[in-house]
Structure formats: C-alpha cells, structure tokens
Image (cartoon, rainbow, N blue to C red; front, side):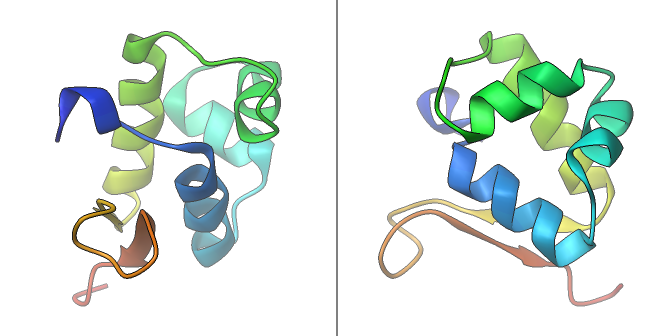
Length: 84
C-alpha cells in the first residue's frame, strides 16, 4: 500500500457498493464514526491517515482488492477477491 494513496473517496464508495454495505456498515467495521465516512466520501474533509488505513483494512478484510491509478484504466478502483 502506497503511503500517499491509502484510499480515495471513490474507492470507498465503490467498495461499499460491491459489498452491499451502508455507510453504517463500513463505520462499524472500521470502528470510526459514520460522520467520518459521510464527510470523506462527499469530499467535505480528509480523515487522518490512520483512519484511512482503518477504513481500507476493514474493506480488505471483507474481500475488496484496491487498484491503484497506475494499475487501472482511468484511475483508482476496486474489485472483489476471486476466491470469495
């Protein structure tokens, strides 16, 4: 995981969508406030790096793989692990 590319808002939204998770589900899994997820995903504020790591880890633990912008066509993305 690259230090400056821990997680971007579109990846968080996309990961939640493919998992079928609400913002509450993600907040619970990452042990952060729902408002943190809401503000991050709508671009109102950038969480601390530690918080982004917690969010990303929760999504990865649920089976999400993150695609960095140089790996994906058109920017960063997400997909599910194939063995789920």
